[in-house]
Amino acid sequence: MSYLNIFMISFYWLFLSGTVFIAGALALKILIAIPSGADACVHTGENKTIGECTIPVIFFISLITLIFNIAHIILHCSVTTETPLLEVFSILPIFLLKTKYGMYSLMRTIVMIAIVLVLAFELKRNDKRVIITGFAFSLIFLVMLTMSGHQGTKGYLSIPFLLDILHVVAISIWIGGLFSIYCCYSFFLKKAGSESWNIFLEFINRFSRIATLCVVAITVSGTVIYLYNSKGFSDLVTTGYGVVLLMKILLFVLIILFGAINKFSLIPQLNKTDVNDWTRLMSLRKKLATTMTTEAFLGLLILLATSILTHLSPGE
Image (cartoon, rainbow, N blue to C red; front, side, top):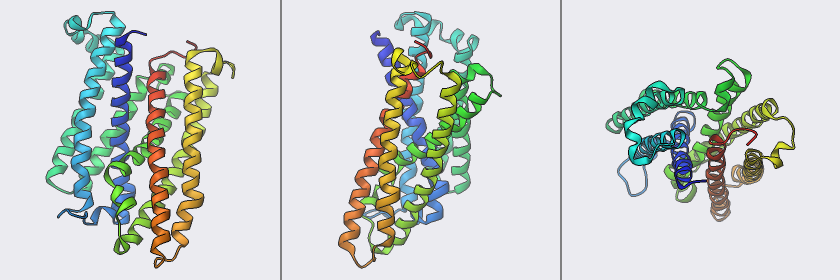
């Protein structure tokens, strides 16, 4: 594998991680943070609500994601056309306008610019309708990403393609939500006091329920897609694609185990422990913060495996 391939996959990983973060962060706001009251809490040491503090973070990551997206397109054009990197700009317009992947790349770039503009507008005002608009654009972006993937070659009304959309959206809401909690809402896992304890419980319980639904959707859709594409379980150990897929599955099992610890042990204990037993509550919350941080790290590794799979063909 050449250094250009390594850079191409690396930039795609960073771009994909940013995309998942944006979709997950906006979904978290709409489904969890705003309804639970978390966004309305005033951040310690800030004269702003947590909701107001999170938007600049999401906006900045959307800008970085746009840059990584453009960098990946340039490298992808260079690798697929076997054109030296310094000469690739001369054929880039043809690549973007005359090839199927190029056209999808151009369209997703336009949608990402729209997301950046929506978030820039949200910096000036705290409006749930703007957040919903940004999330709608992020869903469109995820669909376009799926259209340019392996399942898109099977037709846009095929079962594998439709399941892949479900798969990608569920991953984005779950893992992107974990990223968002780590980057934007860690206050609740580390510093929230007794005055906001009920909001913390509502926040974490809502996320647990939605994460469970996402895990079910990911498991079912991923299994069916594999059965559609696989010629046999031997593919998992006889091809490079299969080995990377097996690693992704193992990482997925591992992240589910940590999620199960949260759902069936730590969160129920947090709900049942008396609010006056602050020492025990802090101990449980610290453990929850550790397991959720581990989940977020494993999520990054899953996205790395996904990025490698995207640049391999099944059977290779």
